[in-house]
Length: 463
Image (cartoon, rainbow, N blue to C red; front, side, top):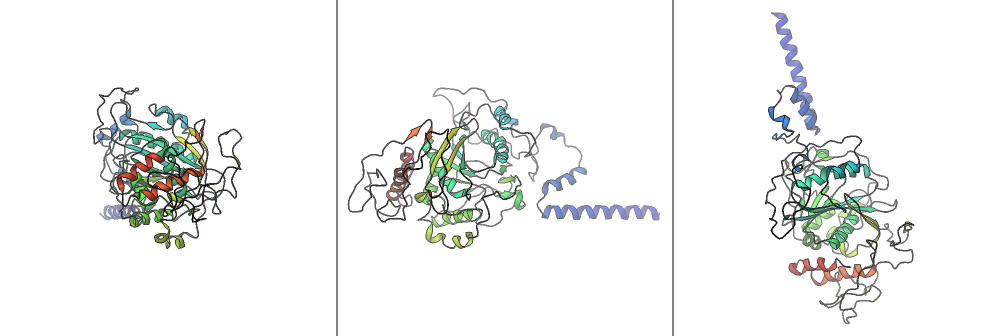
């Protein structure tokens, strides 16, 4: 009898230790390890053979490519194509995310036959209700990029979106500036197409639930609500990092993103403050739906922690109208429409400005800007420059050149914008283009004139 009691005592001790270990692991956010322990005591589920698990916790899921095999390989044509359903029948909830070794971009391309050059896709059997651009700031993260593309393309196809993927690659080895690259991505994507919604997406975050719709809301949306890095919880109320979504009108209301956050940290909080200061609020999906897995990595070289970030955040209330879309200076060095994405390599300068340390243009890129190209205007350098809060031109005219000052008393402006300088599919940003965008922003400020502010983006696509 004593022997049996001893066995039961040891059994309960062992069970208690297991419960303590599970609680500690859960507290640290390692839910999948907890799931492993739980499965030991579970009988096999008959539904597991289907490759899909709709457990309440959403800790595991099915193959992201599972529902796409039946799609037609050719697009329908004609005016009789129906609109896609408001709720896509292809979505299935939780998605299993892993990082298999040996994955290549060629394999990703093979698994996505309906994605056309430039990373564009539209549903083959219905007319998409939404057009979404994915903007990914990038430098030296090719290993992460292939995993993101492997999951993101089928993820978006399951939502029956018309979409395009843009990789905004910072040239050179100077300090990384994520927010400024997102400003570049917005402007360059809108020049190619009138996107309804733009998602600004970190390259190391993989969505884990396709019910997290990549469409915009009536207010700016923060999609990456629950990351495994933070134990699948929102770290703090105003957090706006990882993956966020804006309509063109949202972007204009908040004057885009800050250009002066060089290095890691601070820009997400600045952007969140801009949303509030512009009279909007942040929307989010539920914690069960807005789940993301982060590809673990160390800080990149050239992306050290920004020591000025906290001091800069205290000034956002006074600087957000003066630094953003209206002051973004950059030069496009190359634009390549690759099978899975559009790669835009851009020179954004340093903290000292755009041109003090400008890298040399690649020898095989005849359309890249030369060293003696005119520099984009500096809105803060002169009271006669085109500034978003001065009175540069009349409402029906546009500045023709940054070298021709815009005066509030005179109207030295041309009646129509000049055509862009384009060669071999590449676009060189000229000084006039910055003036053109800024002037329209001043004349049709979205806080007072929303309908015309949408037209401003459409008009600026050619500059």
